[in-house]
Length: 178
Image 1 (cartoon, rainbow, N blue to C red):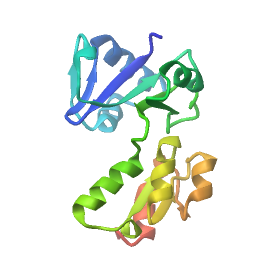
Image 2 (image 1 turned 135 degrees about the horizontal axis):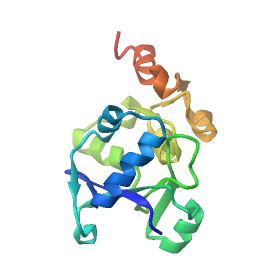
Image 3 (image 1 turned 90 degrees about the vertical axis):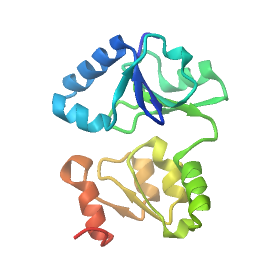
Image 4 (image 1 turned 135 degrees about the vertical axis):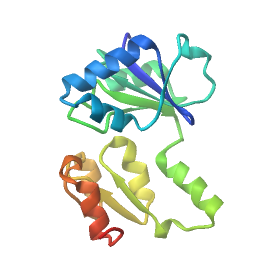
């Protein structure tokens, strides 16, 4: 569909050169500075001419799709799960693709099993559709102020918007940071 996309792997993000250039333009047009874009990416980007050869992809994020999330889901079938983006107001043309059955909650459960911890001792913070299962799973759910309504309804606490120090304020509320 000619969308801008990034592949998320355990080693960082993978993009084609064209997708990287369009990715930057997308976020510059959304009002971010180049510095903020680098801060958001939190990892190095590997430029891959043919990303189809990658076998270590955990998630695909896409932007500026002319095809709606539900239509992409129909095209991909049940093996994959397609969800709208968790940022901004455009959750119908921006989103992510993961394997069905793999969520932030299943990742947390695996880690807790490994660490010998229990879910009652966990805190989840989220704002979008891809956080729903995780927040339902955690012992204490925090919704960002800019979260989608469905996220706020399951939250134990709603903090400020992400760009108004919401995470910091949530940590203060939970006495995790002074």
